[in-house]
Image (cartoon, rainbow, N blue to C red; front, side):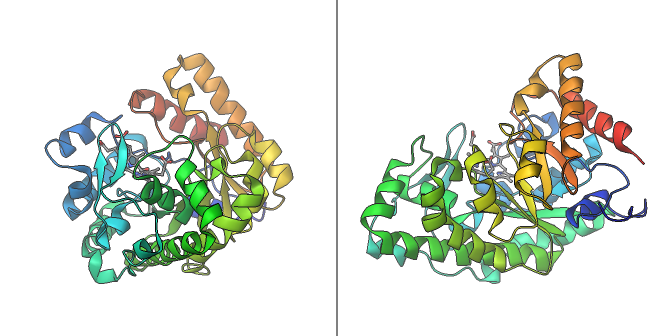
Length: 345
Ligand code: CP3
């Protein structure tokens, strides 16, 4: 680690830069959402996509976990499919299911259904981030997008998929259609990230949640170039975090996208990840299921993640995937406090 950052500076941003933060920063993927009673109350009667397009609601829901937990970063309340819907694709988020596409993308003609995103398509994003600037104070906001592979999988399968079979078949049978879809998605994601950064996001995360379904060779051929292009749009402006689930075999390949920070899921201990990615800042990786356990094993596991994270150039504490809906908010608060108490310098 480099010199210790001053205590007035954001520990999250210091860690993102690979500097020694005043304490190990903590935030949680899906920290806003169904585990919070105040979220359920705020969302009642409003569909997910409608909520994402209502700046006051986005601001309120983004702030809820910041107020409750004292996390070191806020993640913008939105969804990976928001920019896809914004360019006119008929896509809904079905509760308990996930994103569902009315007419799946399968052919050359479908490529044209993905036009470029214009900032005017998402005025509610800029407006919500403007509102958040006033509420957040010194807590940085993380913007995000879904990576082209993960988004393409929803478009091609038509909804959530266990094996991504249609997507993998299309890659092999019609590679030019695949690359055309993925490169258009990369342009949309890149623009979506840029809009958030221009409005005030201080870092971004690219979620390639389902990239773990690909072999390393297929990841390199079909996903890596498009994720690299998506992230290039905000290179040199803010730190970039890159995350996938079940991507232990892809750690090195995913870090080649140029992201400064590698998100590690709970299956790979952070000290092992640090050996494989020397000099990288790591984010992760408490098993989200640990939050459902009793206090003693939860705290022991939290301490173990903090200890393993010391092997990295800098460590941002997070879960190894999103907060599970049944999580007790008190337990999440316990984890935040424990990490802060045991790492404050
Ligand atoms: O708190 C945060 O992390 C910020 C908000 C956020 C949401 N979705 C809100 C949301 C983020 C970063 C996402 C990303 C997202 N969306 C991903 C990548 C991250 C991951 O979990 O791997 C993916 C794959 C999606 C697609 C998606 N949207 C799914 C699978 C679901 C769940 C469907 C369900 O009901 O089980 C959604 C809906 C969604 N996005 C919810 C939230 C809070 C739940 C909506 C509700 O309250 O009903």
